[in-house]
Structures are given as structure tokens and as C-alpha cells.
Image (cartoon, rainbow, N blue to C red):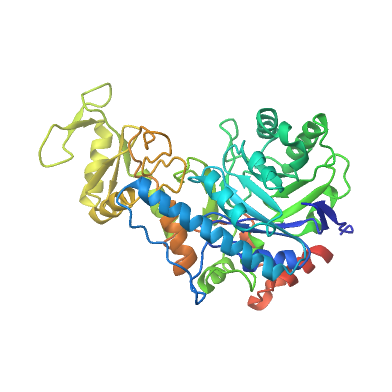
Length: 465
């Protein structure tokens, strides 16, 4: 492997190794502080992070508001308190080494007041802001107002062009780097556009080279690009180091830090990572954000796939092929299905999926009574964790709704991510992962169930991995 030279990020020369931020209590101050202490850039999540009571116990995020707007304000308070707590912890663990960034999602609910509250509540403890999941136009203004560098996450040169022309050109000096997150290989939410095929991954090199060419047009030739998604060992990226087409480059690791001593995830989660096989992580579009995301195909994800497969189109009046009357309740007018779909619906009902739920796309999905009850309860309990939610139809606009029916094919993302991070159920909750996670099982570095410290992982990556 070529020598790994330090790179200036957020005002200091550090190893060009960045910990990727993972939301809801996964990238914490312990893990990000340890990554910074090892000489790199640690990133803690500002997405509904945990806060602690006087005894150091995690404060349960219980919502008592009667309306979504009231619960949303509770969420904002929890998020700010948690982000400050994690910044303080990361600062203590880093002990003045490396750099510390906070990661937020632009499509999370109330992102601007939450990010502002964290930065105001943790002055001098944070050096940079990373932001993706949407088009974060205003993150540049917020970060530079607090004297920090900002790092937008993009998946194409076209996305960066839009951000630069609309906003970032006014905050040129604060741009610390641009994170290119591979939309086919990264874990969590991905930035696939409508023109890109989710089933046909493109190679990252030409896409990043195109991003660098664009950045040079804007006089940003020396601003680092941070490659994220699909990075395992740097020996596999030798041709990127000191490459004039790419220019200054760092590498981000999101999945690898999960399997470390400092990682806060449960023992069950860590054990599951060690048993994954190639193909176990799939790109899907069930997220209530409307984005594609990559997650482990466990019982939770299989249930969502099977639910969507139990789906038929309907009309309230006989129309075209939709000519077969179908009664969805004991009283009222029937709806109309295609003849073949009526037979399928009757078979699903016979199998116990007796509750048809309407979707925004004029289709019905068939679920069990217990599933229907859980879906409706989760939709009712929405706390506005996203700027707009397809599952509950919440929106942070003036009317408080997307204007569409709630979508029962999706799920409450806040609930499931809180559950997996705090309760350790890795089969019946959403388990985000990058597509290389299957390599834990075969990599000699983890032989015999070895779980390294963050420092051991960073040193192995930096010196020979």
C-alpha cells in the first residue's frame, strides 16, 4: 500500500480517515472520540442522540404531547440535549487529538434548530458539520456562522453543482471537503437519482473524477474529496492515492466502526455482522423518506417486501380492467379490482391477511389484524422526526401534512432505529449496513471473533489494510 499522508481537515492535519456518522445512538461520543484520538476525524450523530441523567443512564425518549406538533417539540429538545451530550463525551475521549464532526440529515425534522442548538450548546467542541440525505443548502450558512467547516454529502457532480450555485459559492472559505457517498454501496440512506438504475451499480472512480473536474472549475481543486461507501482496506484503493485525476482524497468508514470495542451497538448486533453473507444487504425503497436505503435483509425487511407483494390496484367505480366488485368491510359500497387480483386478494384473506389498507397510489395492501393495528398506532404516534414522512403523512410545512394518504407499505423509522440501538433486536428491526458488511465474516483481521478497539482498527487501516 502507498504511504498514507496527512491531510488538512477542519483546520488541522490528520490521517485522511473519517468515521462515518450513523444516526440514532450508533455513532456516539465514545466511538467518534476514540477515532479522533487515533488521529483521524471522528463523527458523532446529531440525529436524536442519547442524553444521560445524573447517574449516567440513558434518558428514555418518551413522547407525551397530544399532537404531532407537540411531540415534535419534545423531539427537538431531546435531540439538542443528546447532541450536546455526545459532543462533550467525544471531546473528553479525543483528548485534543484529531478532529470531531457532527453529522445530521437534512431531511430530518427541524434540522436547522437542532443543529443550531447543538452548536450553540457545545462551543469549541465540534470542528465540522457533515450533512446529507437531501439537498442541504443552508448547512453552509449555519456551519460558517459558528466558525466551523462544512462537508456536504453528495452522490454526483450534478448534486454538488446545484448546491454550489444556489448557496455554497457564498461560503467558499468554510467548505472543508465534499463527501462522495456511493449510492449503490454505502449503508443507510442513499442518493440515487431517478436517472440511475438501482440494479446497475456504476464504478466510483469516473464519478469522483467528474466531481473533481467540476470542483476545479470552481477553484476548489485543493478541497479534499472524501470517498464514502464500499471502502474496506485502503490497499484496494491504491490507485486513488496521489492520483491527479482525484486530487486530495480521504476515506470514510461507516460500517467498519460498528465492530469495535467502543461501538455502542449490542452484542447481538455485533454477532450478526460476523455472520453476514454476500447479498444479505439489499438496496430498497421502503424508507418513509422516499430515498433508497441499504439494510440487512432480516425478518423486518422481508416483512416489508412481502407486504408490498400482497398489493393490488383498485378503483371506487368500475373502470377499465378493474371490473370485479370487492367488499372491504361489512358495510358500504364495494371497490373494484381486476379479475385476477380479486382471486389473489381472496387467497390472502384466506391465509389470514384479512385487513386491506389503502395506499396513496390507489392500491390495497393486505395485512393481518395485528399488523394493521400496529401500523395505525405507529402512524398516530408520529412525532415528526422527518421533514416529510410518507408513512404517517406528517410534514413540517404550514398545514402539517404531505397532502397524501399515509403509506402502510413503509414504517416508523424513529421507532425501529430506537429499538435496534437500545433493545438489541437485530431480526425484527431495521438494520442499516453498507454492502461490504459481509466481509466481516471472511476477513482474517476478525478471525476467531476478534473485535478490535477503534485505535487498532485505525492503525491497521493506516499502515497496511
